Length: 639
Image 1 (cartoon, rainbow, N blue to C red):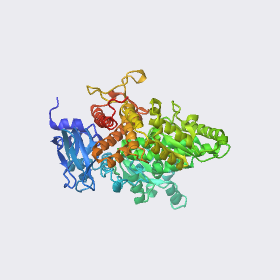
Image 2: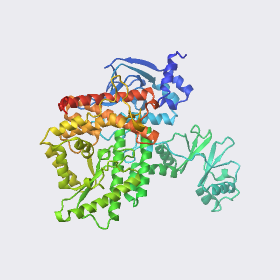
Image 3: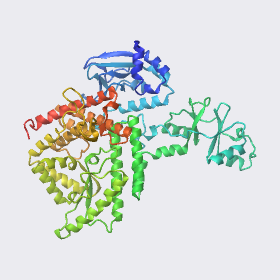
Image 4: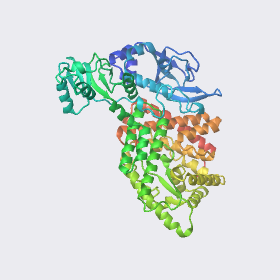
């Protein structure tokens, strides 16, 4: 049985990045130098302005909250580091005083990893460096302050126009075509022709790269007559070659090519010319990688003329999500990127559908995205929720006008279905005559829901009160919003119903602190993270947003952040809810990617203890916000 402290430390940290990227023997050397820190709830590990320590940290047990000190000297939550999370990375990346404050959220055990020992072992480990810089950038700035909003990636990562694609590991050719030093140019050219490639790597007897010959070399040095075709490759090859290790990122590869004015980079086992050749990164590989970024995807969407082209572009976005999740890019950033892509896909689908119609739209209209897309929270493919508002027309041409938009909606929803967005089982789509109406009819509909609330109205409110314009005349949605808020001023009963509806999914844990699992059907014994954890937060944010007359803020986490500004007394609760929503959304997305589904239902046996602990930690704000709703809307004895 293991009993040394170093071995116990090693057994824990080896399961988490970046330590899982380190060779076992090297990791044990680091573990021997790790210090163990015990903290009581409220203890401060370091605070803003402190001189940097010679360590960075990993949470072993408990939780460490990282705070930013705002302009008015109040602490605002940036992140909560649970078991396995690293933090306090500033001394590792930039020798500057701390910008954040770290306080124990509860009794905690923290590992302090010595920076010098760590860097000595990992300085050439590209995967470790990439992870640490990304993790550092993620928590560098305060996401709640307007003056620093959007700067998260400015100093240490590429700008938002290129997003995070530059920081992805480059995809290079894994089976490079080579020839020995004793080959003639003719022999090399025959090999290149056979494999239809533009370059060949010249290697020595140990398969170390010695030089490279490209099509340009053959054209400029052989075809011009400078050298005969039987010349040895050593006479015309470019040497020495530029090399890198297999963990090279797209940005690093691009910089190397620009710096050395080359189009090919040799990938070797240890990154030097004195080790085995394992691959070749070409300028074309870099361009392909750069093509899979939001800017390029959006351009492809705008140029698309057919549904299959839209589907291809949207599928690229699925790859982006996976890459972003793997590299710990903040979920708020992913939300914003995907909201742009999803809206662009829908916008283009409507535009293509209009061209298929026998005539142009008879009057102004707007296509509204509802539900998760309306909240700008749709990541993986889900079902459709949408509606159409068209301009008021005279009674005599109303039926004809509505028929036009229903036909248009059928084309759009069919296209979205082919792209990957399933039809809504409840038929909450613009192709349903009930959800394709004139502005006046929509005003009447919302008035009915608000002034005469019942179970059906609450069900529909969870979908239709989260709307955003995606194509057409935005002024129609603005007029509808104004009408909704005017009507809300006339009643308090609706808020009680909405508040009660937000309580329909109680605590995700039983009285004995066990997860509440599904009891019937195909999902029996699975945990429904959407209905049990995410929806209570979504519903609470919606009713509180409507109560506070907050306009133009649709996403759940941003709604809570706005509420934190408006209600300082509940600031900590709202910020905790925002954080919990983002953490749960990321968890659901990771599960969806892992199991190739929506991630809605989770088999708890597949989660390790640390993952279950992180889930449980997100449930506390759910209980607290629901208790708050009960008090605010006096729901204890309601209904």
